[in-house]
Length: 279
Image 1 (tube, rainbow, N blue to C red):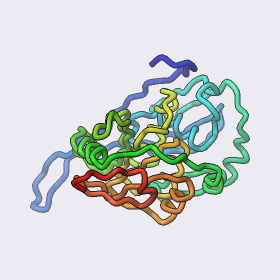
Image 2: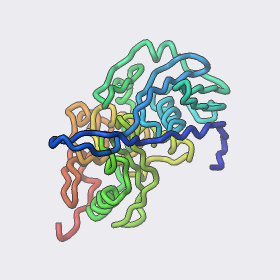
Image 3: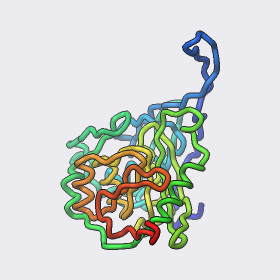
């Protein structure tokens, strides 16, 4: 990948699923697959920041997206290297420069409702008052259905082993067509969205015209991350929490819940959705 700001990064791939022997209700032995779960401790300029529990499918992107969404680095240009080492379960991040007061940000920690428990540093919820997405763009009902169909057809770890969440980001190709840009699965949805955020940062891809999908709940944390990426559409096959909805109203995010087949429910900013004439 050609980058205007080249970051030296490892490519620390690991097995994502593992074969295990189990016994069923009739006492029969069989083999099945379960996803991996690994601790990954992030060190920022040799300073320990956090330990994430992760599947390990895109660890470098996860680290980059986490640092971005927690405002621990300001731009990709600030980072010289990200090196993931699974022998020590660590990710060493070296910066070129840092203007972030890490002590001030990490002094306030909120444990979120993310699977495996996510963490937010600083006053991210309070800072949402400074984010207000512009009105538009629009998304057709046909495009929503096409997106859900694309997710259902996608080859996933979940279909093989279960026990993971998926996040994906799409772009519109027309009134009724969408194209998948990134698809990430992890043991927690907060890790999956951070990984996608990191990939978007590397690609210098703005979120203005994109659509985000997750298999997990649209909690306050997920809405915060969506607003930070400036993505106007957040879709889930699951539900929405009250704080997630309140933050979506403040930031002008369109939330679609219970997306399955042709069914969906709009919880905020329905004016962005264009219904088909057949409705």
